[in-house]
Image (cartoon, rainbow, N blue to C red; front, side):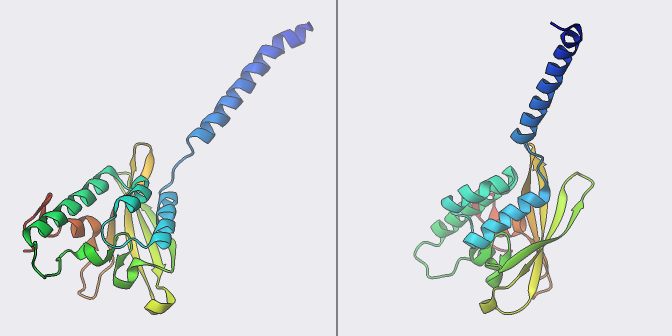
Length: 195
């Protein structure tokens, strides 16, 4: 074997092995970005228009986008709703839950099913989480106009997930959060009433 080749071949093989490892690593775990999570989430919102709490089928679709904490709060809200039903069995009254007619990620009433969405801004906070402002437009039958929400996105288990949603001020002039709406009238899984 050529003496130069004898010296250069091991170095060349080592370099090729490192390049192959780097390429495999790059494809196995692509870097996650908060805006990618938000875009994917709202594509599903447009497709499915989830209203109220997520049922089993919708939860399977949306769970990968949600933090463990938010999934737990949704389960607690479901249990609280079941407790309210037990307490009010047989009565002809409407459940007092704000989430019952609510687009869980986009807002109340006609905001359940947005026509379009776009990311307006992304801000990194001191704790490393992100505030992602998402703008929406109404469907033609729901009237003109637009609105926005602010998604609180955190890094959990190596990927970005939604941890809460801040809904813009409504007609009453108050803003609200998804986690606040989920817990209204509830003490954990128990219905205690609105105060």
